[in-house]
Image (cartoon, rainbow over all chains, first blue to last red; front, side):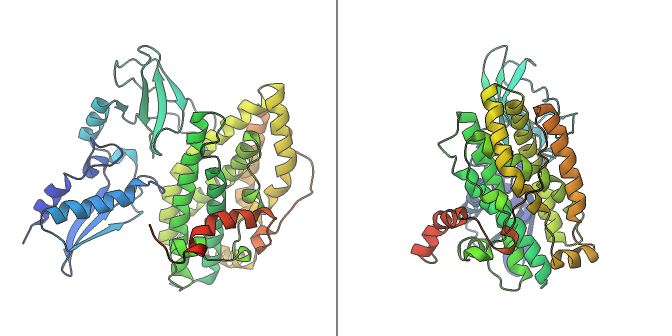
Length: 161
Length: 251
């Protein structure tokens, strides 16, 4: 019989469909793997309530394990603990940067109203002269920025805490 | 875990999110600029996602075991308890943003309070949703300020939106006997306390937007009792079309 370590290694080959450089582990979505009543129970947490990638990720987990000959799998989605961008691993942040998406920065101003936009360095040239174009980008988890130095438009993985 | 008072409460929250999410979705492909088209549909997606969590919980609370699709698609108009505010037509961008601002300024403190709800599943939904709602309020409040303190045209449009929407805001804070029961058990916050926070937010944003808080006490209500405006039927015919035409279809 396969071990948890093996299942865990297989799941390192499951990527986020919208940010295909990150695995679900890099994102911090993979919460728990255990064996119970004859089934492998995989618990994942959603990044955003309405994220349409969640169903795809569930299907991808099943498909990956099926490919390895494991079919007694149950994937469950839990809301608690609530996902935050702090759950993205160091490696995940590095991969985001290389992919051209600015990783979440520590946003000092926590107020909702009238907060200063955070300084997000450009993932290409590292300039801090960047401008927020829109708080909502190509997916729920991203905002749209533009670098004022190299003029590159880029996605910023919004801080969610 | 049957609790009909809590069922009603959670269902009502889900109905607000569902109908507003559906309204925002109508902007898809029609936004004034591409960024706002994307923003409104992003927010719609968050609201629909929150609805799914709330409806799944509601289906457990009334013991029916109905899932989110059944609750969203297979009820009659009078079974929906959303506030009249969220079913108001999108109108122009000013109308949509002001409606959104009134709702976000109400929903954020509500979710904040529900984060400490002793019912774990509701607290988990609140914990998840509060983070998303902060972005919604930031977005809608900034547009209210930009338009209110903008050009003569934007100000005129926002003022027209305010003249229309103000009468619907009070219904957000309507409480019935079930609410009183839930509050007595310490499960949910008093909506009067939420209203105070809402008022402070509105005053603060309106000050920057150079808008005056209307001094009218004329208010409309009905949605919380299942009595809707004529708009609701049109929304539901769009929303429910597939399930009513092809019952139990999935894709």
